[in-house]
Image 1 (cartoon, one colour):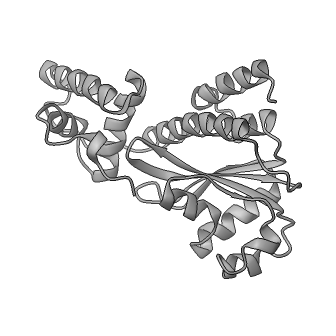
Image 2 (spheres, helix red, strand yellow):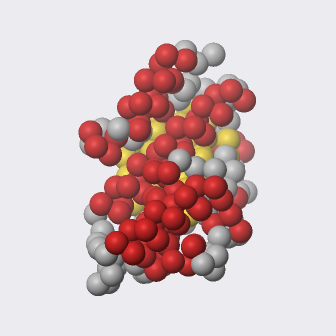
Length: 233
C-alpha cells in the first residue's frame, strides 16, 4: 500500500510544479510501482507534444505515439478512462499494429495510460511504464487518478502561461471582473471543483475556442454555457 505521507508529499510537489518548474513526471515515480512516466498533450489548441518524460525509453515511446497517432495515450483520452496494459509486447498487436512494430526494441513492458483532462476540456495523457506485469491495484489506480488530475491543472496552467488570450477593452473593467467571479462560482457548482480549478476551466475554454475570458464568463452567467452538460469526448 502506498505510504500516505509519501503520497501527500507527491501531491504537494506536483501541485507546485508550475511555480517551481519541477518535473510533472517525478511525483508518479515516487508513489506508484512504475519505472518511468511521460506526460503529453494530444489535441488542439495544445498540439501534439511531450511535456515531460522521466527517461529516454518513456520519451521515445511517447514520441512514437505522437507521430503515429495511435497507442494507449490516444485511447485513454478518447474514452476518458484509464487503459492498463500489463504486457504490451504480447497483447496489443491487433490494437495498435504500427506502434507495436515501431516500439519493438524500446523495452516497454507494461503501460498504464490515463486521460489528461479538466472538466470537459481534453488535453492529453499520462503514460506510466513498468518492468513487471503485476498491474496496479484499485487503490493505486485511484492514487494515480488523483495525481493525473493535478497534472492536468499544471499542464493547462503552463499552456495558458505561454499563450496570449484574446482580450477586449472591457476585460479590465469592474463589470468584467464581476462577471468572471460570478461565472467561476457557477462552474464550481457545476463540476464540483475548487474555485481555482473552475477559473482555470473558464480560461482553458476561452483559449481552446479563441474567445475572451469575459465572453465565456458571460455565456456561463446567462446560462448559454453549462460545463456540466458539455458531452465528454
